[in-house]
Image (cartoon, rainbow, N blue to C red; front, side, top):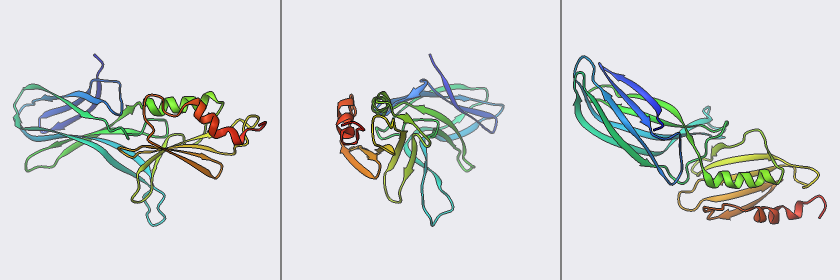
Length: 234
């Protein structure tokens, strides 16, 4: 069975390890793994272990000096309320849903799971590790665009968020000049939990499509129809 070690946290003499049982996690499905508790040379009380799925995003706010921020899009608590005894070995399984609006991992966009160990009357301990999120709907839609001879360009897959708005994951492409009169092409997936949007930006025009749902996403025929007015040789 595949195991991805997310964190190893030492507290007193004990160790708390978070292990994911899958290489990637997928929106709309469960992330599954185990917490491994290993006792040290003395008993260690632990109340709760918390797992958080975190996305880093860019916010263009002229009033702030901080542009890269983090947001928790899912959290899961494991109640231990117990003592990890000296020399003890214990395994606690966990699972939590990965939200449908979780962004997809790219070279420009990272996702992480943070493990937090809550200790009674003491300082909580935490550790964070990157995790791969595979989004079949996004991937299928992007592959259709690539098949039409568009190439990924700078900032491909980066998440942004306007103040008070939803997370948006943007995929930018360079365009084949011999086929389309398009200077810039951007696919933007707006992460609304129950009503995802696909915003196609062509030059300075935006086309908004609601309810982008599996399994087909946005088809090649649909893209050809959007691109038709921009063909170099209509």
